[in-house]
Length: 180
Image (cartoon, rainbow, N blue to C red):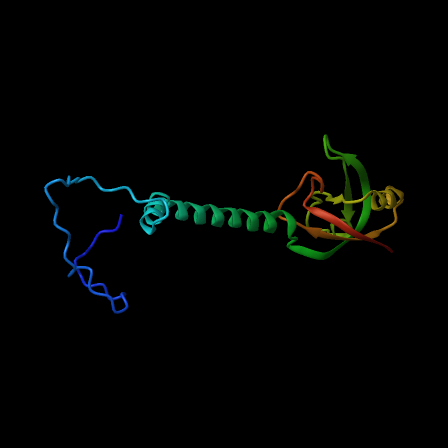
């Protein structure tokens, strides 16, 4: 509803001031109602009143932006942890000891290798094999040919911060094989 502030209306073009116009005086047969009249459906007052009732809650915009920023932060975190490798073009030289297919739902090939640096190091004790996941079947078949053969092989791999079930159980993902 629009209320009159009893100030001159500066937006009227040459018309007389609505505040200075005389109001009609009621006659004896007129009834005076103190209830606010309902605006007609086509008037500008009706549209203003309808827009006032449809006004959004002030916190709705805040929660919308908060949800958007939270979803964006989660998306960036997922991308950095699982889809963006933090080590690329890494190489390891060694002997393939095991290539096997593992998994309950997502079957992936996993491999183990004894690195030459672990075999030639006389200061430190041998700690563990180098494990990696093999993304496709053709690379796994090639590596199974080198398994137990005693021939050294160079593998290129990428390392991720996290593992995904369809990519394998290791954070090291094989990208290429270079026989020696």
